[in-house]
Image (cartoon, rainbow, N blue to C red):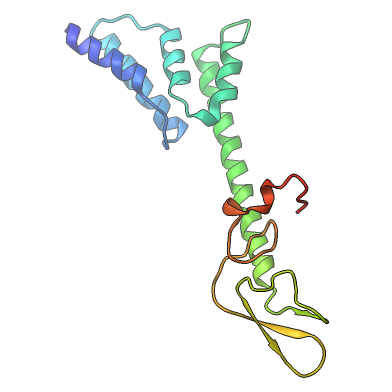
Length: 172
């Protein structure tokens, strides 16, 4: 019996949210807590709260610090309810981020041709062939599916590897 209690206590302390939904994570904590009660081990509400807060990923750190910093300790119901709200906020933020990224990419891929008068554009030599044609300026023909950075507008890299973003004087 003691071995089972020890195993459940370790499992309670080591349960992590990871990529699971809050509902799944909280259900796992409750199952372990109920198993401890079933074998006769006393588990407090604070034990469950500590397990929940310790099992949250780094993106929840402000939430965790706020809960530990409260002058009045939160109840288990408070923590669970606030976690559902926090998850909804995270999901909304992710959806907005994806929507903004997609719309930025769509807007940028709509620009098929560029032309410049008199001299080469700032993208000279970066993924485009310049050809002299009749008339004014030069036309640019694309050389493939190289990524275009929506931040600086240069070809050949994405935002995650954008070198100008590290420059203090860079203005997107």
